[in-house]
Length: 423
Image (cartoon, rainbow, N blue to C red; front, side, top):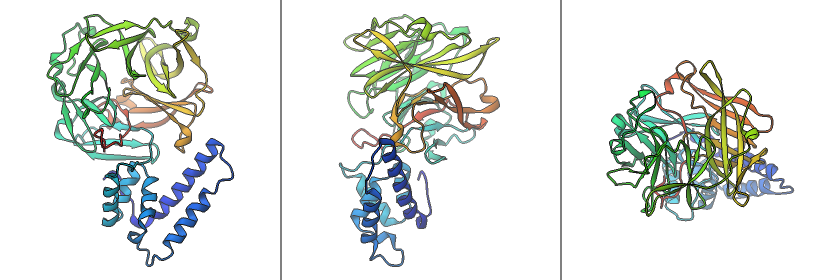
């Protein structure tokens, strides 16, 4: 179980949480004169009138389904823990094609020193850490990326694999030894050569492809079950991020150059001929570009640039972000000054954009980011930061202790489709 709450408090907690959530969503969207509260309370009071002795397992079936339809993944597990009959109802509901859990914001995925047998998730919505037992192959493994509800990981001796943390299903990837050897910066020899990886689709589907940035920003790909990685021509592309957008695969360089990545019939990377942002829009008097990220938001492709301050070759934590939107017709990038109600989640894993209206407690027009700078980890641990686009303000919203520095924390969102190999 991810989370267990006391059965006697669950029903009242659910009702309070549901009505509060509805209120906040209505206020965010400007909806007025609704009777959601009255309808909910009337339905519950009418249907629960005949229940005696607080026997919550005797609630009518349609009320139970109403409860389930308002829950996220943590709520589903809490629901299942109330009693055996509720657990049976939850299992039956999950088998229905029309059943869907509420969407949820990403969790921060953590690994703790001395607790290799578990993978931990921090939920900002619940303010808690949840733990799941992991297979032995995942002990002390490093997180390389996450999307479609799967983790891309590298374990001992760079043994790479995909893992569904809920079903514990594991799919092996080709050995990293099948990647070509290139000179490594500063002569470093790394067990894990992959910097970042993404999935094109859930790995149980036939068309799934894993794309990886490895070594000094080279690119490779494979399919589940293959024995070797396929690489591109031996040219350093200096790639920072990759994304599937509008049916195509794109990559971005640290110089903000957009590249089209083609896998068939022959692997190749071509210049999209999109003019980079104006120099005055990118340059900062006392900050340097640390990383460049791609994320889709409301059907548009965004480029997010992360800035840091260097003092005597020492890199300090993230100091600022800038956002640009792709203008395909104008073949250029346009600076974005306001995200509206949207919020971005950026980090090692695939970035995402969500509406803050749908998730009470989260901030609109902001960037949520997991700090990747390894320098302060030994002293302070990892940090999750919030960047306010309105006034360029950095807010440290969560610090994870020094005992959770086995791997970079990444954003993880459960994938709730049974057909795609989700939970």
